[in-house]
Length: 80
View 1: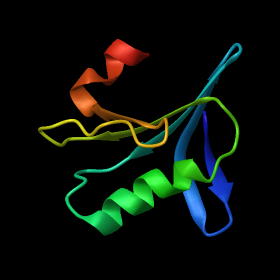
View 2 (view 1 turned 135 degrees about the vertical axis):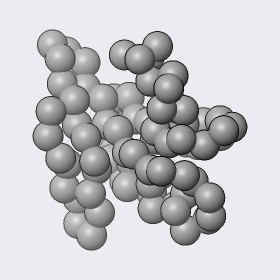
View 3 (view 1 turned 180 degrees about the horizontal axis):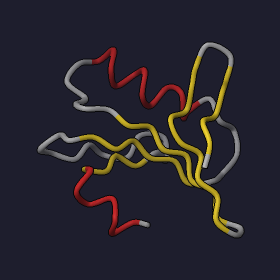
């Protein structure tokens, strides 16, 4: 696991196990448009086809955005 760096952006976690690669952004809440853009935007700049997700403590789940999943933190274990 490591931090991914992009020009002017950062991916919080890059997890690798065998052939599986997973990019994860984490946020406390996605409570405004600038936070949503920051968290999803970093992942949208990655042009490969590995899994990408944003994890937060929001009470509701956002729809997938450009193939990027939104996951409530307490449900993350179900996806791993």
